[in-house]
Image 1 (tube, rainbow, N blue to C red):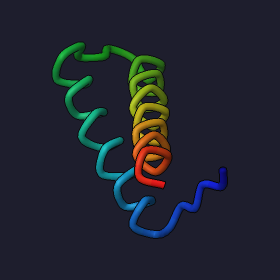
Image 2 (cartoon, rainbow, N blue to C red):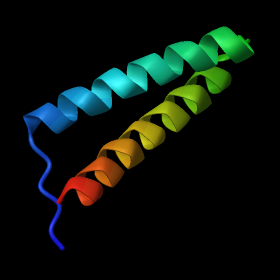
Image 3 (cartoon, rainbow, N blue to C red):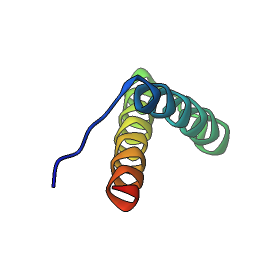
Length: 59
């Protein structure tokens, strides 16, 4: 099975990642740059996983 990611998928990844990072920042209120980095990493990985899962389900 081939996964084809297009520009619309990249827009979705960015939107999901930004929203998730905002929600994590509101919930946990990081005190250091390491906390911010960790939250951003979690948000980006989750966004990529969500878009890839949607692509697999609709393929």
